[in-house]
Image (cartoon, rainbow, N blue to C red; front, side, top):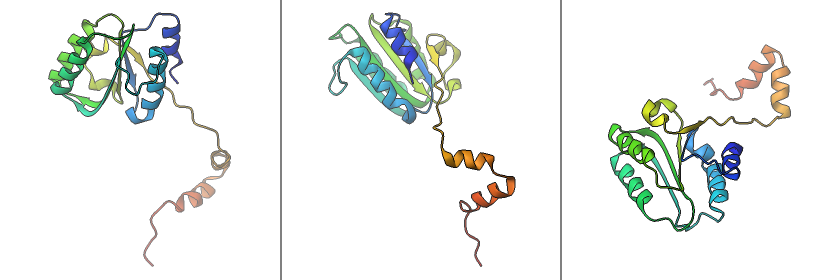
Length: 165
């Protein structure tokens, strides 16, 4: 799904910050695979890997990220995966400062389902990705799409609540 990031890694053109517009739960596993490839080792217990998921990314989370980012790296690259549904104004200010002054070899992967949650100044510091999801073909889907409107209605009735008789 994130071949573009892997291509950047392979070509040694990895951006310091990626903003991934997607549901965090839907892409977290794929991002972890990408980060594993970048770091060249499993993530469990990796000293150069940091991840956090928050419903709302606040100032405390931002300070934790800033502190983790300022520590000395063990390898050539360090990766930070942050996913949140919302960001407070103070956290955005701190995040902006972190993104403006990254230490060399530091890469951020920020995942949020709504691009508008982050203000333009934060977005402008990031390489924005909007993953496209591939829907697997299914004979049931094909059959449904080829059916008439009355057939579709009969099919959907089984998903409706039963009427009390």
